[in-house]
Length: 139
Image 1: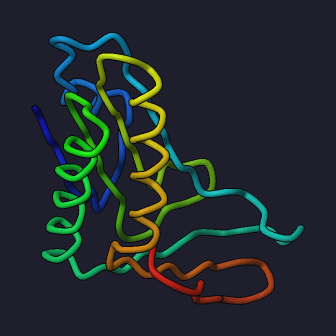
Image 2 (image 1 turned 180 degrees about the horizontal axis):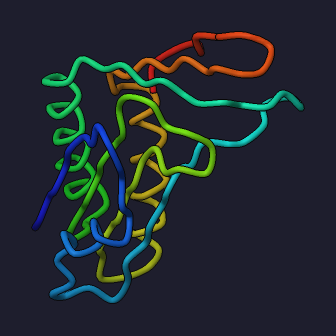
């Protein structure tokens, strides 16, 4: 079982992160990449600003990846989130899941992004043409 987690302050490159997935024994790799939308409710988004409790964030990501491996019987997880300023069309979060079968991979990937949004100590401010707005909740 292989786990790679982290945070990136400058740039998130989903394609290069894919190399962290151990495909030995895998029949599939399922990926999720979340991007900054250019509009929110018809308002131009200039950027998102992410703040985090960095040491705790890495700990939470590791716990989620380890739990996904156990609960979904998957082989490998790569889970990385951006901090700092993320402009429209730039990636925010990347999840790659290696699994023997696609069903477990899809379930694990979906569960990981949902739990990350619930548990990760990340706070997001949306800077739009009509002002700055802190988004509710974690993740």
